[in-house]
Image (cartoon, rainbow, N blue to C red; front, top):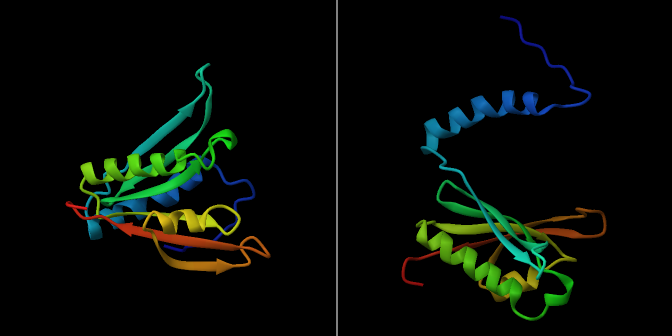
Length: 143
């Protein structure tokens, strides 16, 4: 069998899935099933419009928080902390080992530190002139 590499000019979801399928199979063989499940905590106004919230995924007994958006009018009033606490409570219910996330220096690294997250690392100049931080918080059953 001869293998070759080609560049896809406009990658499709189908191409991504073709790459992802054998990777998922390999990962499952090494680490067991991922049991991936999405999580969404929505912040709505009186009209039911979504103005922000938290979106994440449970995966390999960890919760990855992909998105946290607090509406401008609710910032500094504890809504972000409440969303994070709700996510942490759900992660504990699912017996997660921990929670991880990333954020930029112009977003909220100090907020996560106040919530007990520890920095795992950072990428300088991503985007140029800024930093991207990676955080984790390990959970225990009686914390």
